[in-house]
Amino acid sequence: MQMKQFQKLPNSFYIQPNVVAIAQDLLGKILVTNFENQLCAGRIVETEAYEGITDKASHAYNNRRTERTEIMFGNGGYSYVYLCYGMHYMFNVVTNVANHPHAVLVRALEPLQGIDYMLNRTGKSKLDYTLTKGPGNVAKAMGIQKKHTGIYLQSKDLFIANDGFEISKSEILATKRIGVDYAQEQALLPYRFIIKDNLYVSGKKSQNIAV
DNA sequence: GAGTAGATCCTCT
DNA sequence: GAGGATCTACTCA
Image (cartoon, rainbow, N blue to C red):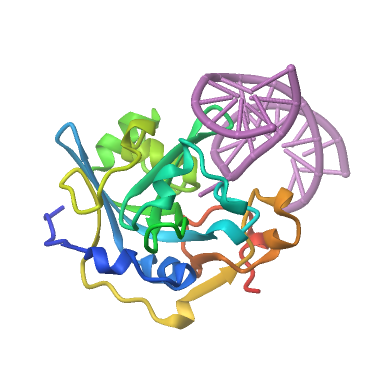
């Protein structure tokens, strides 16, 4: 595939106060990693917003500031990567300004470049829609690990770009979030955004209904 | 197609 | 020492 000219999203994109709007805007953008000279890129097709200290599903809920969550309390435009269930890495984008620990979780991608590297990392032999479906698979395929937390998203190894791809509002579905049932009523908030009918969107069919 | 169990380790209490 | 922003494979229908 021809290398397209990717335009990095400016830092001003990340420091906006409305994390839900950012989560929607990230749909259709390109996540690029270039670790160890292995260039990989995928179009973001699913995101989730985590609204800081008032959001029970967020690690930063109730101003819970620890070594792990410290990065979320800084300025937006940085990566936040952590291990979940002992085996899955989650890639988040920190948004808003310092002391507003908002984050957007990237849950699914549509692979564009470096598919051979992704297959190699995930131990798969051929491309199918499970390659980058679900946040654990996204990080695995893109080579993102815990050591990549706190990376400035204007660096050359890890960034999000715009290639001019536009999606209309009618193609975006808002649904409730996944895997955060412990957050009680806030698990029902429509903070998950997906591109309608995209094969790479995670979850079951019934979870992809607009709310 | 739908539901369930198991893997596995970092982080916080 | 317990539990978690998950995924997969397996079972049963």
